[in-house]
Image 1 (cartoon, rainbow, N blue to C red):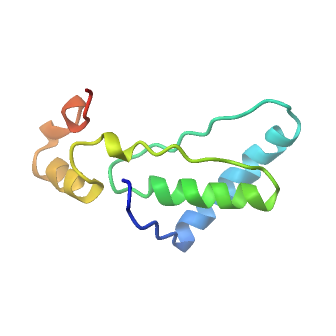
Image 2 (tube, helix red, strand yellow):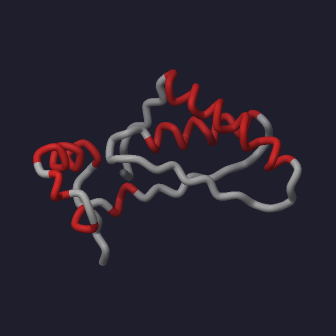
Length: 99
């Protein structure tokens, strides 16, 4: 969410390196732009992994931007995760501010 502190740990960097190693040859052979989606549960490390991917791409002079979507959730990631664990029925469109 806006204002969150991104803490990139070694496992985020390892995942990013693995992802970039697979996609970089495709990106380098093309003149097209690419979109990479990082999906997962609230609090699973999507923002950290996306940031690590962006940093890894920059090492190869591939510019990227990150479009955050966490601000669409009703609760911040940790609170949303707690709500999901408390009531699995919370999972779904009610988690998101659709307006």
